[in-house]
Structures are given as C-alpha cells and as structure tokens.
Length: 334
Ligand SMILES: [Zn+2]
Image (cartoon, rainbow, N blue to C red; front, side, top):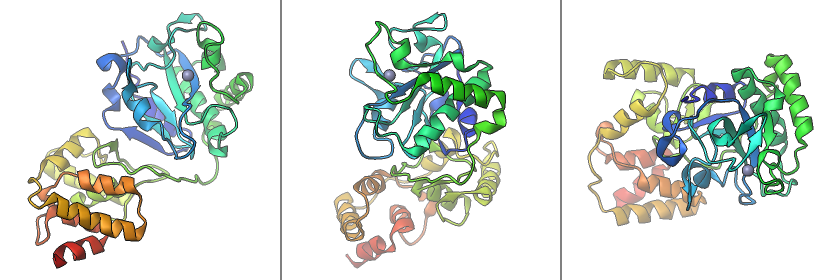
C-alpha cells in the first residue's frame, strides 16, 4: 500500500502554481484508502461549469452521492493551477483496463481537468500544462508515455466515456515521451498568468514559498501570526519569519504552513463575542460597495476568531481589517 506523497513536488516540476488541499497526504477514497502502487496516469475532464477557474473543486474533493471523494488525486484548473486533493486512492476510473492493469483506481493517478467536456474550451494554459503534468508524474515513477491513458481509452465497457474530449491521446503520449527524454523540459518557460478566483479559508491549503507565490487572505493570516508584512504573498521573507515563529512555538521550523502549523494558529482563540448579525451586515454593506465577491464575504464570516491578535479591536475585526478598513469603521460607528 502506498501514499503518493510526492505528487505536489512532481506537480511543481511543471512551473504552474500548485495548491495542496489540507490533509491531502492522507486523503483517499472510501474513508482513506491507500493506493496499491503507482503505475500510471488517467486523464479526465470534469464536465463541470462553464465559468470559474476550478468550479468542480467541491465535487472532486468530496465526491457525490454514491461515490466517495476524492474523485481524482489532481485537478487542473483553467489558469493552469494544479490542485492536489489526495495521495491515496481516488474514484476516477471505474471499471477499467490499461497497460496490463485492471481496476485502475488502485494503480493509476487521476487528473480531473476543468472543462465542460465538448473539447472546445481548453485554455492555452491547460493545453500546455496537461502534458507537462502527466510527464512529471511519469518521471517520478520512471514510466513512459505508454502509461498515460485517456479515460475514454481505459474505461470499460468501451464507449462509456469521452474524456478528455479534444485531446488526441497519441499526440499527448508522444509529447510526454519527448519531455521524459529531457526532464528539464517539463518545466514551462516564461511567466505564469494566474487568475485565482477561489478564496481559501485559513487552514484549507498548505502554504509554502513557491514560484509563482501563493496569495490570498489565508496568507495574510499566517503573515500576521508570524509578524511578517501582510501583503498576502507567501514569499521567502514570509517563509523565514514563519520558520522563526514555528521554532519558538515548538513546531517543526520548516517555514511551511501545513496542517500542524495551521492547527496551532487556529486553535489559539476565543469565541466570537459579538453579535454575528451585526458583523455580517457591516461586512455585506462594505463588500457590496466594493463589489467584492460573495465567496470572499462568506469566508470572512466563517473565519473562527483568534485571540492571537489581542488588541483594542476585536480579533475578528482585525482579520476583516486586513481586507477592508472600512468594515472596522462601520463597526466602530455602531
Ligand atoms: Zn473521467
């Protein structure tokens, strides 16, 4: 039994942003099953919503009625970002056969790439990132392009599946083999355009110093904790200050905000002691004025309050202030 805990490192070989969903190292389907071995990769499309960067996030992570999540170990978003959901088994292939293996869920890594599923909507980033990601995985397990199958090729009975629609699998395999012959070519060139539309709750993903840098309000929470400048980008300076803070807290000083560090940060708090309705209304008022996304408002409202930020302002308000000083003004006026 194996846990593919190298998947995030492999994904980072591509040069695209990698989002490690908290708990992924021990997440497997059917309540946490490991893989039998890792022998190859199956490519899928999500058949998800038309808009958004990775609208299938929840279903891929959690599964659906009758099918436990994760539905794949990896997700490929429209901007090329790679989600890492699990290191154990995932329910992606169903009844299947490829390269001498049956029931591939025990042996093959699944990638669910975001697409409505007619083969027309792949972004340039996805077209570029998909074969690189497949090559990176096969490079890690020392297998060749022949171990990459499209779901429509591996699914049984034949004709059951169409994914990944729009990708010619023979072309993908030959491109993958060319990357494998020269692994330094797996990494994409140039700058990466990132258009994250997902706001991560504090603790939802692992934060570390990567290129490109991870960003968002969850980064600001860690930066506040570590005494770093709260600019919302997890760079080398933040990682260094996090390591210092971890050392003094008796945590492993690796500069990475993983499950243990998040648990430490998020467990140091008091309960919300103010009227939630009042706060909600204030937040909504300001966010509506600013035209800020609703998902962000929800994130703010669900965030558990921490006394780490003890001061004249209530801790929760302090967190809100990271984003909008005007929320504080509103609350204090009342
Ligand atoms: Zn599929």
